[in-house]
Amino acid sequence: MHNAYKKKTYPIYFIIPILVIFTVFYISPAVLGLFYSLTDASIQTSGVHYVGIENYRTLFSDSEAFLISIWNQFKFAILDAFGKTVIGLLLALLLNRKFRGNNFLRALIYIPIMFGVIMVAMIFNYILSYDGFLNTFLNSVGLSGLTNDWLGSFSLAMYSVLGVDIWLGVGWSMMLILAALQSVSKDLLECAEIDGAGSFRKFISITLPSISSTLNLSILLSVISGLKAFDIIYAMTRGGPGHATEVMSTYLVKSMSSGSIGYPAAISVIQFLIITLVALAINSFTNRKESN
Image (tube, rainbow, N blue to C red; front, side, top):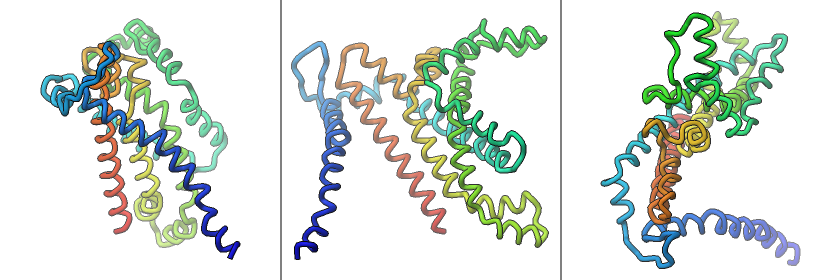
């Protein structure tokens, strides 16, 4: 009886701390944020008054910049996920082969993810500024027609920041896909080769289906990361020029400069809902595809 009792109660010692931590660090801040989003809370005043959905109404009716930031956030997330996954797949396919220097190249591509974002932003601000290294190099080799204000141009700023973020994180996607490639059945590949299948056919019929769940995971995590993107964008452009690289997170930070708490809280709630709904939609879609 005593042993049976111990077996029943033993898991509680693990469940209770997890529930407490989850409540304190996840549920409580979310509920508090939702509460403040329904008030006129501000650091400049001590009183807090309930205003209902007024902050949300202001967001979507009076703030064109916020709507632009949502569009930019989705654009950044989709292109970022596409770039990291496609380039990561190509690099993984290349580095899955055995050749001299293979391990060195893997480490070289993965290293950027360990750099501090602020340091990376400072380096690329120098490289991509109008009088920076890239334009100086292009001028020196007679390609002055290609020079541009990479971070100051309305049409190029978003893609410049995207390029830096993809460079920064593609190593993670590459290593994830590379691990999946190494688990692809060698027997199936050999049988397909005996049957006369070429490299492209083997990739489409065997390799790609075998690593599809990993590709889906890479896309899902990259999209979620892109929907939360803040540090690299804020450090490089502050959301400018104008609203060219404005995303929800940079807009939230700027909205806090007025001292308001309720309005930024409403932005964070909207961002949380968007990320949750997109993640659930992608996960549901990929699960349905895998089950078929």
